[in-house]
Image 1 (cartoon, rainbow, N blue to C red):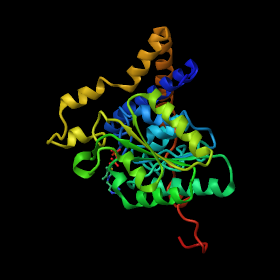
Image 2: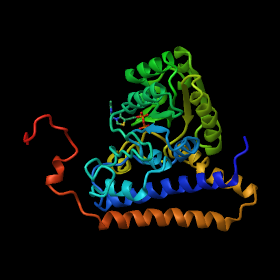
Image 3: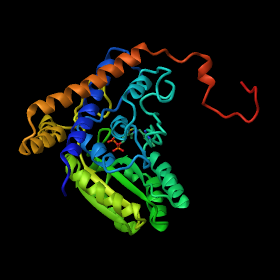
Length: 329
Ligand SMILES: Cc1ncc(C[n+]2csc(CCOP(=O)(O)OP(=O)(O)O)c2C)c(N)n1
């Protein structure tokens, strides 16, 4: 598939933005400027970027606990994401949600979700709403291969198939669910095979190659947008870091070898795309410019977070409940 240079450069920018964001977020967590926990997306950038570049603004996504990459790729404001991680009132959820509860209606992000697999039925509902309103929008549900064994995802696949809903189920198979290898939790090699059981299209994609993901996503979006039915897309990928950012510091027994991690680092999605661009004679200075821009955006987001106030005590009660009776609290 022909992909314009400008589109490829945007993909490079978006992957770099996610990578720098995640690297800086880990530093801030270690320094105590962010509390709680983070699940870094480093290594998996090609999936979020390849999928989201194939979407339109009105399309909707739901995300997972490893969600920063998805929402940045879908166009969320990096300042407001960082502010949310830093628990500041300028964050997407006014600093009361944190890393695993970012929502951005404007960018079409129906929520990062701390509960495994629970974004999937939300995306299903969004797809049903689009179907009901007879509009052109599609929904994308990101989930991990660990979550793929949860009943709710099977229910969603079945329902989407029966009603031919405009939804793409994107399983990011990074081979590990926490410390559990996929071969210990799942009886089949390709999770996309499960599409057969729900009479829908299933496809396995190299999730380390952004252009391959993009091409497959474009086809899937066209297919589901024209109301032919849902698609289950499995992206084979890898996370370089631990399940959560402090994993190495917290665990003494390694569950994967350095050789395995090094193997996937050699398939790095950012380097792969740069290689393609070098072949197309894009000068190295352009990469440097794009890298600097992405770094600057992340640094500005940190400054924005630091300058922003924390929510007040009173604000703790806002937005949480729509109480039927005034004065309950
Ligand atoms: C319903 C539920 N069960 C268990 C957990 C604890 N948990 C958090 S992340 C995780 C592993 C998820 O693995 P996977 O779905 O493959 O996503 P990945 O972490 O690889 O991105 C688990 C078991 C949870 N958050 N929600």
